Image (cartoon, rainbow, N blue to C red; front, side):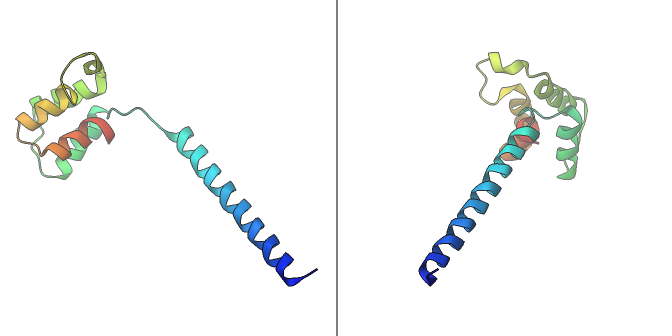
Length: 101
């Protein structure tokens, strides 16, 4: 076997291994995905971790995100995000708390 053939074979093996790892990682991501809405506990815990006071209005907003009912409304980001930003929560943190935590 020539040296060039050996290099090509090793490169092909590495490409195959890399492709397999990428495929496995993608499959794992699909199997562990959850809904985009946070649970009320996740939402309030996230906000507490940034020093926000979690009272009844914040809990109500977080519950709205968990109920997932806002998708049929015309409110961009849903009532959870709107309520939290109205209460003084940073826009990005409100978005993360309501949707992606």
